[in-house]
Structure formats: C-alpha cells, structure tokens
Amino acid sequence: MPVPLLDVKAQNLPLETELQAAFTQVLQHGMFIMGPEMAVFEKEVAEMTGARHALSVSSGTDALLLALMALNIQPGDEVLCPAFTFFATAGAVSRLGAVPVFVDNCPICFNLDVNDARKKITSKTKVIIPVHLFGQCADMDPILALAKEHGLKVIEDAAQAIGSQYKGRQSGTMGDFGTYSFFPSKNLGGFGDGGMLVTNDDELAEYARVLRVHGGKPKYYHHYVGGNFRMDTLQCALLSVKVKRYAQYTADRQRNAAHYTAELLKLPGVVQADPAHCKCVSTQDTWLSAQKAKIVLPVAYAHNSHIWNQFTLRVLDGRRDSLRDHLVAKKIGCDIYYPVTLDQQKCFASLPETSRSGCEVAHRVAGEVLSIPIYGELTEAQRNEVIAAIAEWL
Ligand SMILES: Cc1ncc(COP(=O)(O)O)c(C=O)c1O
Image 1 (cartoon, rainbow, N blue to C red):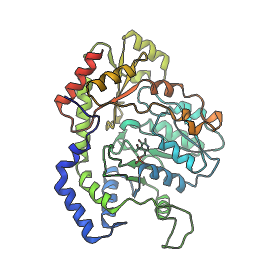
Image 2: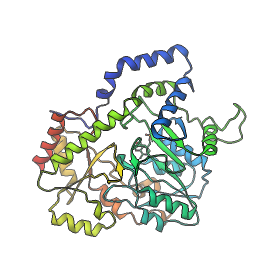
Image 3: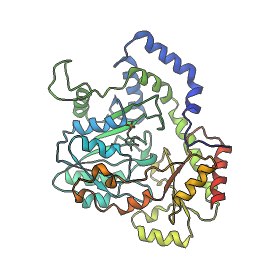
Image 4: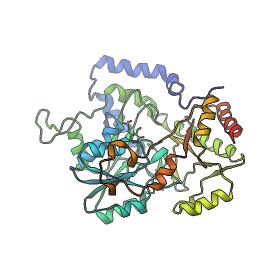
C-alpha cells in the first residue's frame, strides 16, 4: 500500500460543505481585502495562542520580514538564526540588508544551540530568531535570558509550531514577536499562502499593522515605507473553519508519533534520542555506538508539548540515502528537511566568514535526517506499512 508523505485532501475534503459556505459568504459580500472574516480569524488565533495581538499576513515569510521591519532592522545589523532551518528564516534577514549570523543546532531537538549563540554575539547583533523546528519549541528560558543580557529582540519563528508549548507557554508568545505559517503542509494548513504575526506589545503591534498596508495611516498618508503583507479575506474565512478543529489535528499527530515511537523502538538498531546528551555530542556518539544504533528517533523534551509537524529520523553511518531509496521504492513518502544548511547556501557565500562558521552539528544533522509521514489522517494500517518498510531495511 503506498503511503504519501502528506495528504492535504484527507483533511480538507471532509470539510467541503463548510468550506463552500465560507466561500459563498465572502463571494456574496465581496470584501476580498481585509473583510470581516479577517478580524474573526485573527481573534481565533489570538485566543488559541493567548497572544494579545494577532495580525494575519501574506505568508510565514512575510511575517518574519514584517517583524524585522517593525523592529527597525537596518543594513549591517546582525541577526542570529539557526543554520539548520528552512531558508525563509535567514532570507527575510538578508532582504533588509542585514546579516544573518548562523548558530549551530542541537542534535536532539534540532533547535538553536544557545551556547553557540552566545559565542556569536557582537556589538552589531540586534535580534535572535529561535526556530521551533518540526513542531517542538526551542529552549526559550536561556534564549530569553541571553537576549535580555545583551539587549536583543526575540522573534520566534513558529512557522512549524503553532499551538506547541514550552513549559506551558505557547510558541510565538514568549519573545517580542512570533510568526506562524499556514502553508498547506503546516499543521494548520491553508488553501494557498498565509501567515500570522503575533505580539503582546501594543506599540509594536500598531507599527506592524501600519507597515502591513504600505506604511500608510490614514490611507494614502505614508510616514513609513511598508509593504503589501495582507492575507486574503477568503483565506481567513477558510482557515476559520479549520482552526476550530485544531486540537484534534494535534492530538492525531501526537497519536501517530507515539505509535511510531512504541513500534519502531522494538526494532534492533533503533533508539530514541536521549535528552541527557543534548549538550555533548561526543558522549552522545559513545552512547549511540554502545547501543549499536542505526536510526535515532526524535524525542519531545518533558517540558515541551510537541505538535509533530515532522517526524524526523536521524539515520547514522552515512546510510540515510539508502533508507530513503528503500522507502521510495516501497512507495512510502519521505523527504529530507533540510539537505543543505543555510551557512552553506551559495547565496550566502559572500557573507563574512564569521557569520558562517562553527555549525558542525548542523552540517552533520543535515546529512542524517529523513522525515516520514506523520499527518493526522494517516491510518494505523498506513503507519504499520511505514514501520514494516523500515524494519525490512534494517
Ligand atoms: C521554519 C520556517 N520558517 C518560515 C517559513 C515560511 O513560511 P511560508 O511558507 O508561509 O512563507 C517556513 C515554511 O515552510 C518554515 O518552515
């Protein structure tokens, strides 16, 4: 039985009647830009995340750009961000002429290594962007403490992590700004591009609101240069239908992750990442070789509530591509998020050497990772098919 990596239709088609009603409502009033459904959806996200302000925007990428613009990031300013993440995190920094300074990652949770971030702070550093990768929060307490110590602003890139929690706090609401993405493959997947910027700061929210509409307030009077960062009314109306089901979507992914973990751990050579080795890669390696580990399963830290945007294996001993080829031959969807770290991207080759150094863990992880299907509608039979295919490869 083929198992796709993702099946957005399985989630959306059961909602067809409600989605069509939402479409008809927007069609009939005709307010396609900033219509009434926008405020409704923003309120729903604010209530779900506990953020004081939620501004719908054109994408998760534009949410990052808008956050950086609202913090007045200027050419030459330095912004710390992880080396192992999706491109948009650093792309948004570069588009303002600022310099992304790449920070190494943790091999256990895949998130930014705060000790490495500390080493890379200079007098030009203005912002740190922790990314809550694959649906699990970065270690925010030390990140927030570091930011406070050095007067840095914090933008949480929670594109993959809306609704995930760190010590009971919602992702996106702990820093100065948080950003979410509604790209169709995200846990709250839209019907095209869309995103959200959240903040608890009234002044930043107001400034971002003005920048979202070309910096004009009132309309046609521009004190600032902003952009067109709006999300369509229609997209908001459709996402309102889905946001009401979000708790169930998360529970379904968590069930799938628990099933994979329980069953895959029964296979020889499969271990679960051990948070005890978070800070020390060499003791982790000794431990992994003592276990004769071939595959390392992801783990949620006890203080986190993980929403599993991805279920990402680490395949050791240079055998990742072999497992990928095997799964592809078996028609099991899988993909590499992400094969090339950002410090190694060609477009950043002209950045100063200091902004691209010391990301060895990130490089290694990029050579080991393989994500397998985890979407909520995956059936038990499909999960078992994935597990059987991995068992066959081992
Ligand atoms: C970590 C991260 N940041 C930013 C983005 C950008 O979001 P969007 O695709 O909505 O622009 C994504 C989306 O893939 C992401 O995964």
